[in-house]
Length: 442
View 1 (cartoon, rainbow, N blue to C red):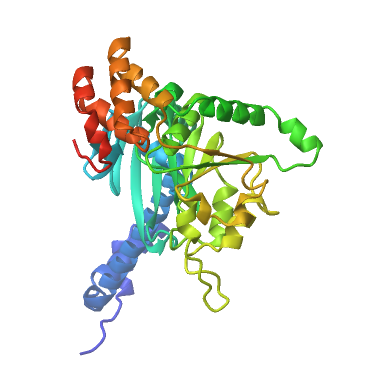
View 2: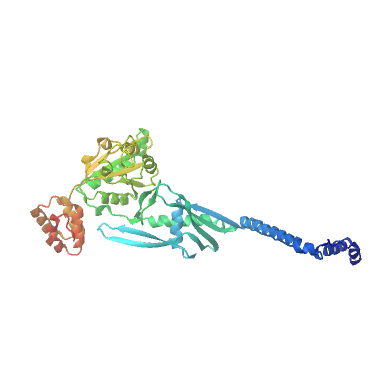
């Protein structure tokens, strides 16, 4: 098949004599009326045009995005991450199709358990309207990056809005912070270690009144006065070059009120509590030091049952001890070079005889006190606290208490009896014999 010839004479005759006419007529003759070009070249030209158009759209959309929209990324490691999720969970002007459940289990002092379910925005896209501006919220969970200490995936929350509304980000975060602090106002926040950081455990708890925990005469008052004196003595410590920290040890039988008193003391001082389980398997010396040096402000560090972590210290091939934290690691964290300043540490134990003398020396334990089983003084105070102004019945209860010679009952047993008969003091008197068995279940 011969190649078609270009008819220049035809182009000349059909044009209007101008340059534009020659070009237009030539294009029609060479391109549009050319069967070879129409068969393949036209498709190539069309594809090239579409590709250029697509590239232009992508670039222009990217340019428009950069000029008109702005993103704010909040990583899960940042403190404002939980503040924002709490704020968004309660924010009314939002549209969410992806929800996650958070279950909070609260154990009350009387042993009752309350469970609360909270629905919070889950991974996915959400839309909110804040002060007239629409914001797209994308909560994304990384499937590859994990927190090696806890095994949980890292998360990020990305907020997208118009560039002109970027100043609303600061207002939103300030509002989330204020709401989080208001929820904790007048309450005690319990923190637990989560990997290398402290995180709130459950919901903030109502402050426990110091008078609700009845210890033997003078114990609570003396500890409170000592802590208050410590909190006002920072200059005295610094001028003398003494590390500004103080350690307390409460020891005694189970159920005597050691932990309850610490919780009440935190409420009295308007402090929070950081609970650290040093017998945790994946807790190392380095992580212990890091946690103790990054305790949230105005917090009491609580190490419960310190005897349980090292009562079976067995060295393993010069690699430390069987648990994650070595004994020397704990001692260094309490008063070593890298130990925390401005720290109040409370330790509890049921078996002080099992504690190493190295742990008991001043600088690690500065104040120790026995919190024992209930004395007659405590029995009387507790009865009148549960049954106000029932002085005659209180005398009857004490008489029966002496007659039965109940010398080794805990305040927890007494509280269990009074709670069971919360509105009937006479029934409590009738049931006092049950205290003879420490394992009585009402």
